[in-house]
Image 1 (spheres, helix red, strand yellow):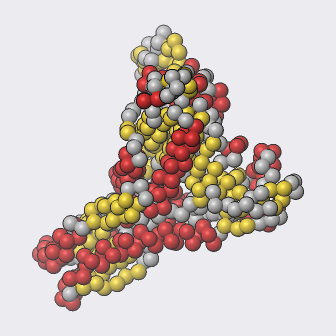
Image 2 (spheres, rainbow, N blue to C red):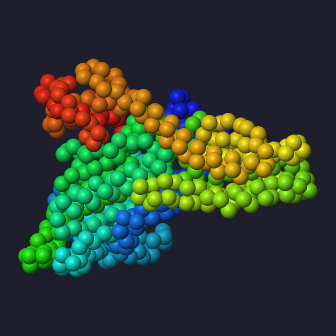
Image 3 (cartoon, rainbow, N blue to C red):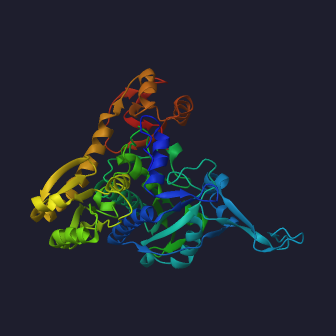
Length: 502
């Protein structure tokens, strides 16, 4: 295995190498699309399973809607279609035929669709077309639906997990009888995401509302969580939107309220995607490879026996026997406001491959971010201990065989806490309050900046054009504070979060 480029040498190349060397994903033959490999997909499945449990714990159910959307549907909500128009993949024909010149197949010109179909960039339109048939009375509300699906956005500059033409995600779409219920839902689901990202992904993040010019097309308000990556850039990892009555009006979704009056329903939508995988890599990993929080790791402990003969291997496995049996029957418990206590079994792998050297195996599992590793030699058995390596701190210790199960269990919980604490420290240490444009330009080049803003789109766009930094959110915990905009000198009542972003 080749030595990784370091983060300081070339952060972008370091990221790409981890994706490749940790066997997470690879580029497909289809430009801009990715193949998620088994190890990477195992991490995504853990993400999906936990989030799915969270959605169901908050009253949501899963459904599935078509991949294809009639073009006319996207014309019904003007701001929505404008947002996605340049990224839509359009289906115009439904059949191929043999090339009469013998050069494979061609599109049959006689098989043109009467109405073009759009490969879903997001599902509001197709879902609200169904909701018109599902919702008639206040008794049908609230309607709390989630969908696990893929979407297509025709990106020109792609990067595995962070920005691809096709990616996996979940999208929640809910309908409510009042504006207050919709607002409560949008904020509640943001907090569900926050619970997951903090307690399971181990990623510290800033919660807030998007400014008017950055909100989702068709939304009344957009909320987001913004974590810092190790290069100081922000990653908009997920959003939640209060859509008001915009989509209900576009698709004529009305209900009879308790006063026997017709009224348009209120809506929300919210989503996260395989972009979380990119955030996971960039928040925690180091120059040796991937670092995974135990809550999402496909393997928690790998055992690397050092042996020459089959008899040596059998002796090592017998020596570890009862300790490993205890571990395999143990669980990791994560405290979560949404789920209470989430329990998952400890996954142990014994690498018995005799064709690879111990050093090769150590390197492989460090690259893959396995939280704990045991190396065991014949001399370790003679002394009654094993060598235990901790991936997040790269520390080694010798543990008595009778203490192995309890030590591993304790360390997994400690690692889960440590990756969060480390990322919180990175973020808080490198978030700066500034008052002058000169200091702003210096700090925002590499880190998060809290600065006053005059609340005009013109000033925000000027800053973006001159520095490539955008307003990531108006933080919920940003206190009232008198100040002036650093460019226009106009009064401001609170600071907002600026950063460069992926």
